[in-house]
Length: 200
Image 1: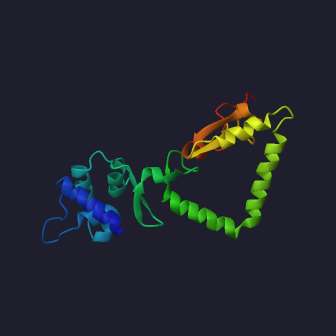
Image 2 (image 1 turned 90 degrees about the vertical axis):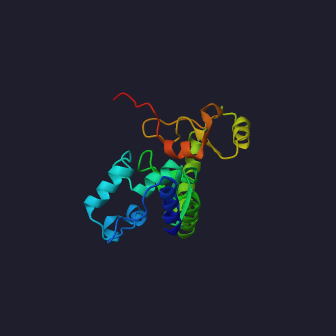
């Protein structure tokens, strides 16, 4: 996490935050904020006092270095050990409104690796998706307009079904009126959810 150390150290310098504790036991406050007080042989009370003085507005359970990166719209990728813009991270489906621990580059790389190791699973998922589209495409669907909609998709956007083809409560049709453009971030967070639930 050398890059993070340098980033936090520069932030401390720019904001007149002390880098080291008082003698004789000079605690490296930068490393304490990154690796935790135990790793730099610092007491919990010293760490708490430092945090309350210099980072009083930091949310609970958020590390100081994460908080500093967030102030600059940045995040640390644990896989490639680099600081990247928040826009370079996907939303984590399992944790609402939270970003993935790895950047898009590392995530995509891992996805490709997984696909190569699991070709049967990939084929099964693709077949399931194709079957769902066929089943949800009515005879009166305008296939030319659907094709045109896909071809006109803006760069960086996905073609999404407004009402999901395989929704939990409701299933939509593969027709042009059920298509929309969403950013990758919006599409991944939406998944196959539909905002309305059926009355039981």
